[in-house]
Figure 1: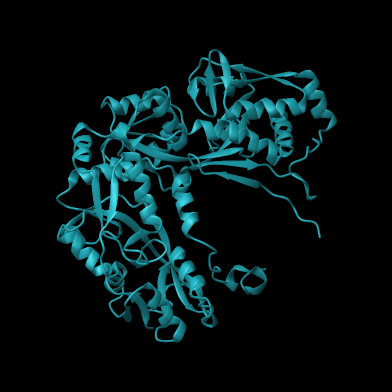
Figure 2: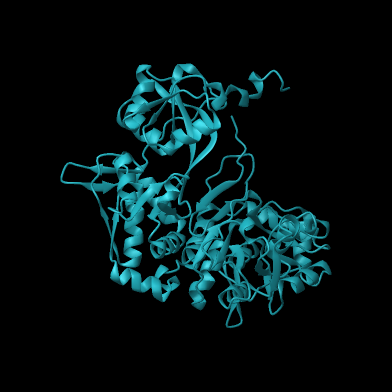
Amino acid sequence: MKYLVKNSIILCFLGFVFIYAAPTDTKTLNMTQAIPIQLTKKEKYFLKRHPVVTAHNELDFPPYNFNKNGEAKGFSIDYLNLLAKKLGIKVKYISGYTWSEFMDMTRHNQIDVMLNIMRTPEREKFLHFTQPYAGTKKAIFTNESKVQTLRDLDGKTISVIKGYFMQHFLKAYYPNIHLKLEKNARDCIISVKNGSSDATAGSSGIMRYLMKQNKLYLAYGQLINDRRLSLDLNIATSPNQRMLRNILQKAMYSVTNKELNSLKEKWIGEGVLNIPVAETLTKKELAYLHKKNIIKMCIDPDWEPIEFADRGDGYVTKGISTDTMKTIGENLNITFEGVETKDWSESQRYLKEKKCDILPTAVKTKEREEYARFTYPYMDYKLAIITKEDQGFVSNLMDIIDKPIARKKGSALITKLQDLYPAVDIVKSKDALESFQMVDDGRAYSTISTLPVASHYINKYNLKSIGIAGYTDMRLQLSIAVHKDEPLLLSVLNKALATIPQEQHKLIYDKWVGRQVAQPFNYLYFPNLNPKCN
């Protein structure tokens, strides 16, 4: 049987950059070997008549497209050069103009190619787009700790690059935000730094690179959780160059994974640099850390792999949260010291009584807000429904809300479930393990858990009769809870979390989460089994 080889995707978690390998053909190929480019006679004649094509080169869009000492550089530049080499042509780069000016020049056929451009319906009216070759995620950068979403910027001013996608997106979907238009990303950062704007928004990796390069640090960087802003970067050709677009697309099909990896290692690995958290701290915050260099933390001692206590040799905290705190400690030159508690309820009480400074992973609730303040969430998990495997697929919580649901005593989820579903039947367990055992031995119909916790307990304790039956519409968002009398510590931890690269979070997650349990099987997703599908 022959399989259609579609987009081969290479993920790079540095700065949330995604590199795409374009599809080849209907034959399975070794993606490390050269792939021939099949051009028509007309396309070959076109290249003979156009041995040199022009492309835009920006002054300040690293690591993709920038100019250094009069030379075009960046991932996009090298990618186009690679395509040109495969086609036997050369590229002349045009520099010295703003994005808006480049767009006008391309619209009027004064430039053949626009690089790293996002496809929009308006642009499709006059440009010809290839498939994407890279992608970015957008983030908000600010010095205000309370700004975590675009909605938090209603009535405030945000600086964006004139003519870029973010300008049009914010104007269309967030009309209450005031826009301050700048000519490049560096000027956007400066605008926030000097107080002319409340925030800026742009590619997470690019903005961090520019802050490091120019020593223009902003305290907070928050990814924008909107799929519309996980955007692809494409190549586009001018109105008169449709054939050039087709030729470039065929050349993109010939790019191998090895070639893409080489470009990724050269530009993405070096281009996305981490912002040192110490550079974002105020004098008061630095003085606070110098005086209080040990932070006492109370954890949930029985919540593997998120956090737990190893009591084999004293009391040693371990898990995802402990490793995250260690990362923060190394970045700030402070120590997080575990305070021994017998269970999660006692840990919460210890924070309330100021016997410890923080809870590394806690859900924000009204009850806890009486004695604690919370950082923004740094863990965010879907909540899975765990049942006996022979019970079948569960589409949502309403399918099982009248059946016993096991959950650990003291869990914030119990309160949330009781608020949403007053008739819910909660069976309280002494710890997370007992919740799964209750389902396994029939004392409860189900339990609700995050995927990493479910995977850990089901695999470690060989609970083969249970598995994921479906997902709820809720998510578990975990923050660091800080005693309300420690506002400077809260501010420091928010800044520290903001400067941990996503790849570091992933390394910590992968360390503690082993083989995951199987996903739920839903026969409705298979057309041949769904009577409503043809």
